[in-house]
Length: 290
Image (cartoon, rainbow, N blue to C red; front, top):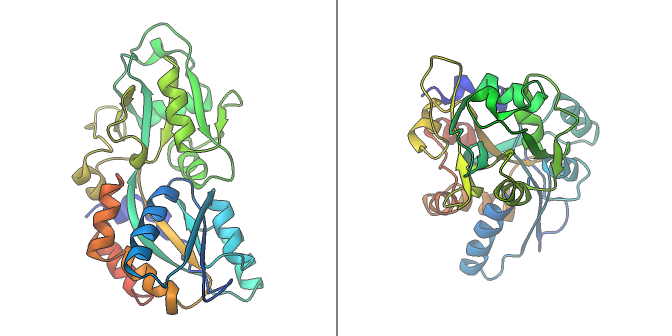
């Protein structure tokens, strides 16, 4: 597997939330990318376990990690690794962060389906979102300006995309959207638009083209819809999706996480448009008791 080596940066921060709120209600906050997925997992789990009570809300990865640190949630969802600063804050709060990977994402770059451009390199995408390339004709498209749609700065996807693809700062002309769904709808309505969203938001999405992406010019292109390409690391913008807690995973939180990473839970991951975790991530999860 190439997955670990090509996105090793995403594994550097390790985290898990203690039971911070109540033994009766599991509170989960964070990443917009996986909020729908975790809501579905929670719904099925509660159907099977009527005594279980789980609340799932979004707000971005920063919100989830801050909620874990401030003991406002039991589980913090995040589409990026915890930062060194956040680990310091957790330590200062008496927490020993750990993490679980619940799914794999092929972060998808999308354009309007009326756009002639169907593939780009990572370098071209970075130049577009930095504002260096401003017209579609510069990358083989029609002579029309490029309109950028991205996430707000509290989003884990915003930070991951900046670090892995832009390797610099976003153009000040980028339109900051509240979530993945808003980016999808904006690009559908804008022939000049381009955006980035989790793969779970683009399956069977009429009105969009999901771009094939190559690491660089001269290398093969791959689609984020191709599970084998995402799993092997041949798709350049793949990443693990995390849940963080602030201590030892135990009790009701552990039972729910065991369900999420079980074969049944991973089938739901696939139904919701993401990819199941690999053996490498299962081995990492096992280190924290899952």
